Amino acid sequence: MLIDHGGLADYVSWAERRYVGGDCLTYPLFTSLAFDLTVTSLFLPLTTGGTMEVYPEPDGPVGFGG
Image (tube, rainbow, N blue to C red; front, side, top):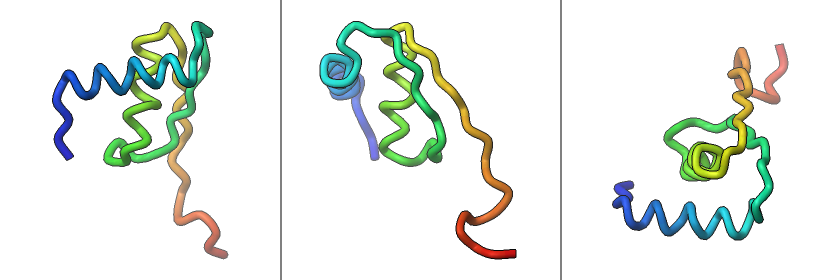
């Protein structure tokens, strides 16, 4: 999916108003960089002064016995 700069800037500005409200928050990063949700997790901390906590990748598929 291709996102132009204006669309991304508009989305991040909306997300900041909706989710942040002026607070410096910590955002979890536990999804693939190819996943749409990651856009929010990456850009909101960068534009709002928040922090990002990167979770380690699990050793294998979650929920499968071994």
